[in-house]
Length: 313
Ligand SMILES: C[S@@+](CC[C@H](N)C(=O)[O-])C[C@H]1O[C@@H](n2cnc3c(N)ncnc32)[C@H](O)[C@@H]1O
Image (cartoon, rainbow, N blue to C red):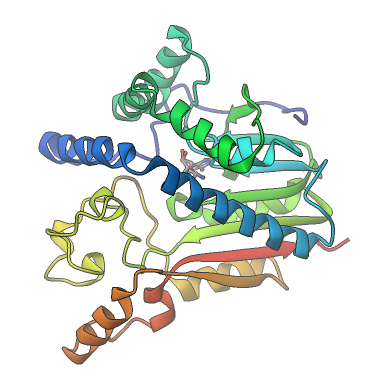
């Protein structure tokens, strides 16, 4: 891992997942997560692996070289560190996350997590570890990838908007489903530009708030849609039903494009479309009923916006 100059994390920073859901909302969230995470582990691992392989191919095309023996920074790897494990097979990988991420069954690590990230985040992580979910999923991912993935990964608790790595420390910065949680994405883009080497690649995937699942209500991820009609967060009559599981900046597509382009001239964009075959028909019906008129199809029917930028040499 490149040297960290200093880590300026407050003792109790809270977690991006701290949301006031109330006791019933939180219990519902946990039970949905519990049931969902046990379902179809091979299928979920296959989907994740396909996504990571597609990202790798796109990163290699942008870099003009194989994604091997590179210094890669993963911004916001999350509690399971799966992206770091995957890239770490062929590269030196470092992660930074606002949350403390325990990697050993150590009371001290969990105490640190509790103090830093609060009870809900800690409870979710302990639950997944105790039930063996994380280990089972990681093993399945390794089996399908045909490679043992590194453990004991170098993750630092650090705010991506105030990184403490030296300039030009990395060949690549990867981030998936983190930017929509940032309070100040411009500060993070500035930091990424600083820590990348000339010719290095930023590969940032943002889950669009305006996509059907962009409100981060776990019932959508678990396909329990009874109480949440499509795009509820954008429809005044259903907005109150939505229970986001984390802080969301609610930035829309045009603003993302403007932010990335002004900070990183020449940045290229791609979309990851919503694969649900019902979605286009649902949108057609809603438009016919006079709803969602102020949103463009591309911000409703794409789940992720991917920004790729090569730092000029
Ligand atoms: C939804 S999770 C994404 C995890 C993983 N990348 C994935 O796609 O499954 C977002 C992660 O970003 C982290 N995060 C949010 N704000 C951050 C910040 N300012 N600096 C570093 N990490 C941050 C959160 O703690 C969380 O672990």
